[in-house]
Length: 599
Image 1 (cartoon, rainbow, N blue to C red):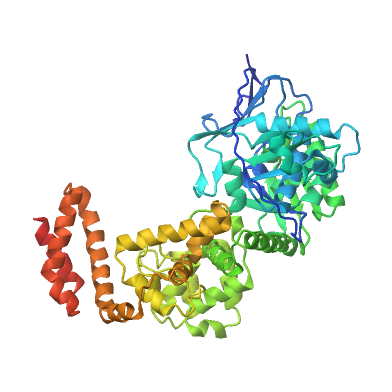
Image 2 (cartoon, helix red, strand yellow):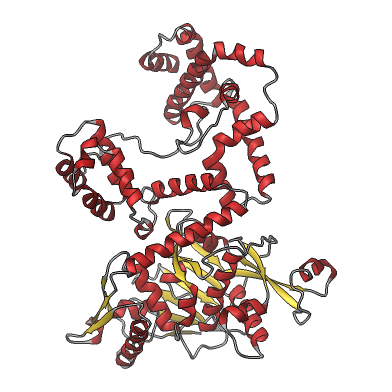
């Protein structure tokens, strides 16, 4: 049976209710315990949970009722929420429990999987009822058995944008562990209270967890969220914190806010719904989460707007939450065998990539260090201009990091004299759009450590190890890198996204340490002998890579087989070998040789 809740055919954002449930279960096992985090109340909330109706505000939900939210007229952008058979979709209780779970996940080391008890959730939620164990268990099962179908709506930090395909996923999966069973006896050492009969292994689903780990989240104070008395006010607060970015003023359409929460919006009930919104804003004002608000109605409620004002210090508080959470995350990385140095590299890569690869603009936090970084890329005259820092800040907010960085590099490269004027005009008119500008971003798949090492990554005194590595063939380097990676994962004790990012950032140092530790250099004379021809070997490797890259361009056009590519590469190297060794070869000569061998 299908029931359309909206009667106004001109409105395209509406719900469809269906009465046929589906469920899905996925289980895996991992556990990491960590409890030394300083800012335990700060949590990361997935962007999809902030901006979409993941938790229902409907107080009259029905058993086996599927709700479908449409976000355009074509009905091809939507979210479907499907409960377990004989159950309801998640509501306010599940929302609070999920917030508490995010806090517990942080305390337990930000692992994708973690184990909790109903007592821990009771303490986080301040539940004053003897039925708390029943409430917690029922809500956890509901969260794990509810499926969400995202079509053209699910934001993915891994994909750097909205996934176009239809994704069906729960928020989390659940495994109930009975402590009386022998296989779970080790958990009894952790949960010594004999009244606790069972515990819960939580597994946050991949899409949501990846966002929480990698730039697909916002930071909130979980205590503030849980203290807000209604789910509507809580959702309003989370949503406007996202929408306002770093502004003290926000103006939004009333209907937009109503539908995003979502609340009832039929014409007959719209005035009541606005009163619910008004009460929510009053609570936020009372709790000093906003400074003031104003509902503007000129003719009808459908065309009304809401003005929201924020305290001047709220931006600093918002940024401070972000930095405090990031510092906590550093400690967690350290506990996972990842050093602060490595994490700094990860953060550097993420900041550089944040605006280059299409991540949400609100994740670019403007700091003095970031402004200094841009200043250092510019001609030295920029540092003498008093207004330059403000100009850079405004440019970062308007154009994003990638564009500002490229203009700064271009200016220094071309020794621009009128720095500020040129900077503003270059950004506004895209003067560097067609320029090939090398940005400060770690290179991928490089075969030479010395050329690709991150300036923040110290190579210590590994001269011999570096010479040894650079003397290896490309295949030998790849085999060695694979060994180092496996060794690194064994030391960490787990293989996850955090570990992969850290290895990528610290790969050079780890390889050299591995060479030294495992004494791969057999004897000194071998190294000294290799040193004599090292520059030649480097040249051969570099020219070989150049030939390979060029042949890749011709591969599709000329339908070249792998054997043919190897044959051409061999012929070019044999033809120009003497010139490469004597360092008299040019790239033009290599290109001519490739063209000749293609015929």
